[in-house]
Amino acid sequence: AQSVAQPEDQVNVAEGNPLTVKCTYSVSGNPYLFWYVQYPNRGLQFLLKYITGDNLVKGSYGFEAEFNKSQTSFHLKKPSALVSDSALYFCAVRDIGVDKGFQKLVFGTGTRLLVSP
Amino acid sequence: NAGVTQTPKFQVLKTGQSMTLQCAQDMNHNSMYWYRQDPGMGLRLIYYSASEGTTDKGEVPNGYNVSRLNKREFSLRLESAAPSQTSVYFCASSEGGRRNEKLFFGSGTQLSVL
Image (tube, rainbow over all chains, first blue to last red; front, side, top):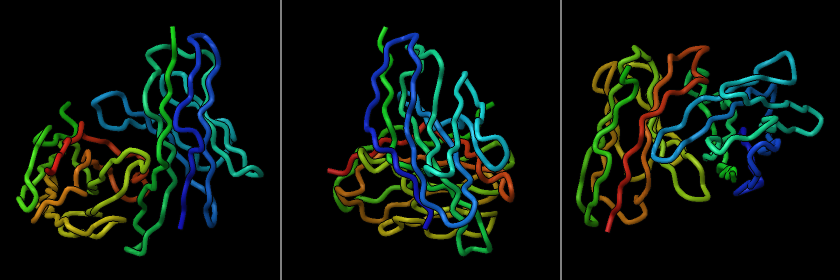
């Protein structure tokens, strides 16, 4: 089965500094990878996805993610963090089910990002 | 744009009580999902509906039932609530087909079972 791992429960960074939230994946076949963000008391929101092509994927709110096949990683990055970026971030991978190939997402356990002023 | 609407936002149940969580989407999406979110475990899929008229079990279906009432609505029912079902529940929808990867989530239902 496809899976993703987020090794850090929490990441702390000062405002203005670059941030990285880590994700590694385990898949059979080509990986379809995603990042979602959850702000307090809200549902998850789509940030970006990697299907094929450039290893650096740009998404919403200035975030980007770097796909690295040799390290089976898909880390989320931002050059300059904002206090408003503080949220819970989830990495996800596409899982093709047995139901006529229906595609579902499998989420990681989440990483809390705390950006201090 | 309402997007995905869940009700109720909060609920407290006693062990053994039943309840239904309601979910509706106004984006004409084909696929709908129910997830639960628990600390340290991320989101786990309970049930999903690939299209109107179909439902399938996800990763953690025990103790739950679902109904895809029509294209817009997908409800989750707890027949006999247990403390282990204390969680935050999210409904989500997606276009379906090749566009399944982008899910749209509701704001969640916080459920406590005493």
